[in-house]
Every structure is written in structure tokens, then in C-alpha cells.
Length: 86
Image (cartoon, rainbow, N blue to C red; front, side, top):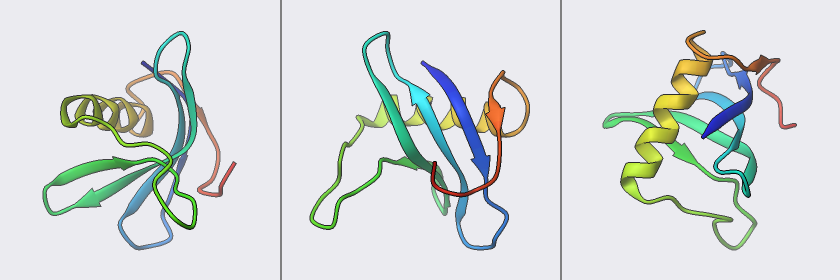
């Protein structure tokens, strides 16, 4: 798993960042959202008007949130811009 780019959000609210990730050699996802919740950081995939585009198993989602936080706080290589949809 690798964070390809991350866009910090400092506009208020619970969204910490938007990011793009390579989940495996075969899968990349764009426009993921790292959100602060009372139970800790969560990652949400983009959604259509009707439903989620993807969901993640709890352990995988936790690992993805940790990777995004590491990228956001400078602990991993990544590209940083602003919190706007790519």
C-alpha cells in the first residue's frame, strides 16, 4: 500500500485530508477521504449519489488510515497539495 498524493484539509470540519492510494500492484483509488471521528481516524471511499464506490474491511481500513496519517504528518513520501478534489 502506498499513498500517491495527499491534500490536507484545514477548512474546519472533520475531514483531515483527501488522498490517492495504490492499494496493490493492480489497484489504485483516488479521492479517498481521511476523517477524524470520535473512534479515531477513518477512511472513506468516494461515493456516487446512490451508494459507496468501495468499502474496506476493518483491519485494511485501519492500515490505510495509518498510512494516510503518516503521509499527512510527513512520515512517508507523498505529494502534497491542497484539499480540493483531484
